[in-house]
Image 1 (cartoon, rainbow, N blue to C red):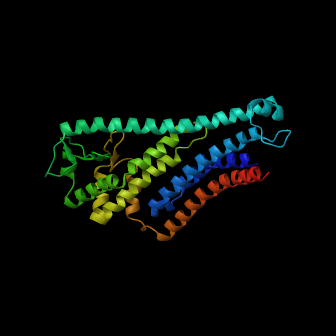
Image 2 (image 1 turned 180 degrees about the horizontal axis):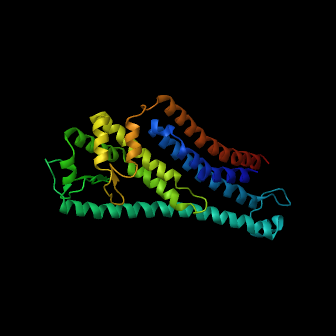
Image 3 (image 1 turned 30 degrees about the vertical axis):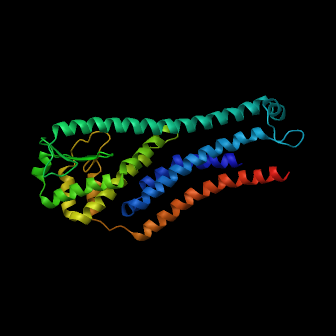
Length: 308
């Protein structure tokens, strides 16, 4: 029953639950708490997937004729029979494969992203110009308005001549604040984790809802930082000016396809403390319940084995 429950929970957390949350409007007023909730859902989904596999694989240690848990392959086969033994071993192998795939995906995403950013940073340093002695700022001789950042240890904020020509001082301050908020909060690491989980899960069960939603939410957090610096009007004008700019892969841009949604949000209601509290509480419950559900059966079984 525990294996079925964990399997059902894992499928819900990688499919219907992200789809429902992605369609909700309240995260627009509590972006930081919504990101925490998304992270809790992702961790709970991974825990549930592992728990389902381990719960089934634990049946390999079914008590033998002497009442003790079986400890050898022959005794396991004798107690379970070939069909069940093979099924449990297969489930255990799949569980290990999912864990290995998650680790490999995380390493691949991290290495590929950093390699791509390092190459682009080298190009920007060669072609870009450092203005006003501001460290980490590069200006490209491009007519199209561009504004993006390259996170990392040697981070860069990249603007174009078109951006400087199109924006006034307050709008430029808003764009710079937006990009520096990305760098300061390391939003790239949040996105990398979701990209790794998205890549690791099979296509037929994973959903792009979580990744797309988190991409929007990190932009909202950077927008909030820019509003505190330059105000909503200046930021809205700057976002519209940079909306059509193309962004290098691995960078975090001020504009993009979500510009319309973000500009409308700047004209709407402010962030809600109560929505944030509700989201944080839900995130804690989503994370704690599967963890306790994983731990309790194992603790109970260990207690039974040591006392028997």
